[in-house]
Image 1 (cartoon, rainbow, N blue to C red):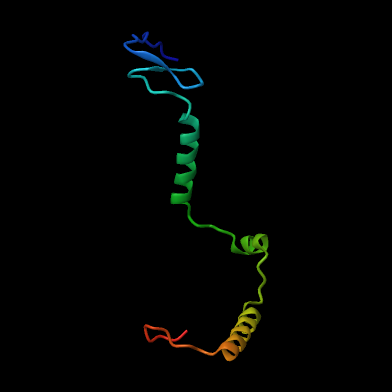
Image 2 (cartoon, rainbow, N blue to C red):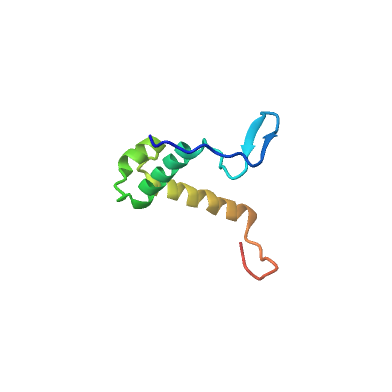
Amino acid sequence: MAHQAPVRVVHARVDGPTKALTIEGVEPMGRGRAKAKQVKVARQLKYSTGNTDLDRLKDELGVSDSGEDSYDELAEKYADYADDYGTETRKDDTSG
């Protein structure tokens, strides 16, 4: 580790209820590791090749493979809804 020269305190004050010492011209420390971790994760996401296992993701989310059945059920449900309530014309002359 390199030897650092002593800091000449030009102006110092105690801030807030934590009594943190603030020295003019010196940045506070403590967020470096967290920021470095965030940068690392962001780079991994940005430059990843997209090798996502979609089948594993589907299993984790609990998605079933019966996509056609669920569409048919929804179409029937909303067709019944349209029959019950009809289609109305809006002020902008569109239906819906």
